[in-house]
Amino acid sequence: MAGPKASGLDLGRIVSEVHDELATRIGEGTVADYIPELARVDPRQFGIALVTPEGEVAAAGDADRPFSIQSISKVFLLTLALGRVGESLWTRVGREPSGSPFNSIVQLEHEAGRPRNPFINAGAIVVTDVAMAGHSPREAIGEILRFMRYLADDDDIAIDRAVAASELDTGARNQALGWFMRSFGRLDHEVEKVLGVYFHHCAIAMSCRQMARAGLFLAASGRDPLRGHSVVRPARARRINALMLTCGLYDASGDFAYRVGLPAKSGVGGGILAVAPGQASICVWAPGLDAFGNSRLGGLTLEALARRTGWSVFG
Ligand code: GLU
Image (cartoon, rainbow, N blue to C red; front, side, top):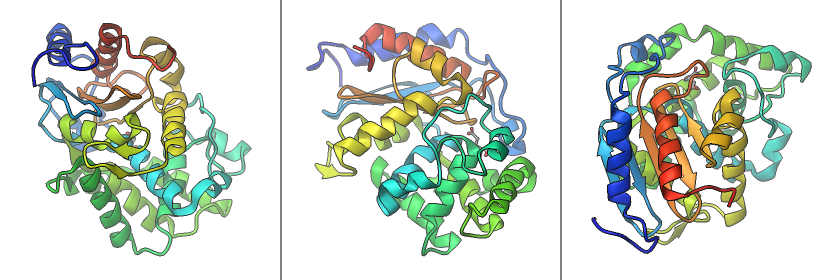
């Protein structure tokens, strides 16, 4: 769609101009190399897509190329787990920024194996354990994949088995987190099974366009506005957004809130999902990461987009 919409913004033009401006910096950052399959990804890729609650879509660059969503899956897993057990989830995991790297183990000992928040690896492993209740690992993986396909309104979304296998082979740190939490009695299922599910949801492959569509309910008070379905209650969407804002970019969450001002969740595949409530769901992808494990170009792109549109949760 072209031309100014209800917002008065010509989003198609803004997205393509922001893309072109930042494309001069394509390739910056370092691809995640601790997962061998991700180390092989060409860093010279860059896509952006956004979807508005009215159904307007704006996209540029590699917006249709699937990438490994990695930790962005944690937002959707949290949504599923909250749907499953409600607010009692918070007896298992906290809601505070960690100020520590995504795969850190240090706080866990002081805090008796209860992870700080659902978006660091330890927290997401606990949330995975909760979401597995009553399911075999295979069923749990199937449920997560179905949820992503439903939200993105696209049945072609799949798990990249090579990425999942690569993480299983090399996931010593996540194994350590799992066993450490298990030692505090914090996991209901066997560590191997929980990690198997965790690695598979991190290995879902989606394009920017699919991810922006999947996140639309967070920009639309918990509803899928294009199908008229309720995904979660408005209060829950607000709370998931609050967690994304405070914890979504690991120990760079404060800096990102300052620079961009939107709830977001990054993944080490180089994607970032950002939510402008009432305005748009946005996904950017560029595989080169900064020192915190967040897409370098992705952060700069969202900063430029927020500046151009005036979108911010801070007024
Ligand atoms: N699967 C990755 C890991 O567990 C996710 C990390 C991320 O995207 O931040 O290390």
